[in-house]
Image (tube, rainbow, N blue to C red; front, side, top):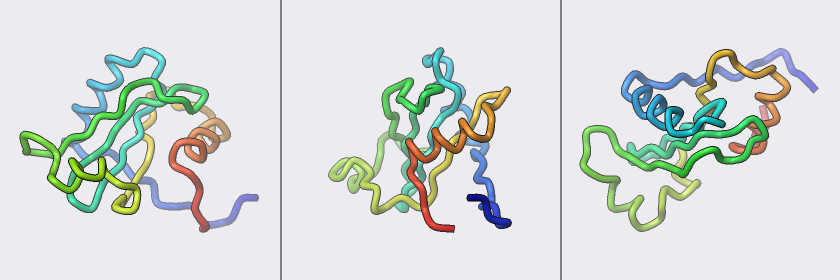
Length: 112
């Protein structure tokens, strides 16, 4: 069921784009990259395939740092600390129905 309201689309930040391109380069089956931003500033990313399955390993990093933060080292970026998550799609993007299925499978759904 569609509602009249659409969530504001999250976009990759300029500094995330290089990491996304690197992940896609090593993931020929990837049609997008899941970007998870944590409250500590660390990021988790992974390529996703057309069926919603992983197309790469999960990469964790922190901008302008040599490694991820101590909290992420302890809890591996626990989902309770996620502030934003979205999929950066490769052009040409899949159909909306496929994007919705993959997003629900990978990130989950939330009430509008």
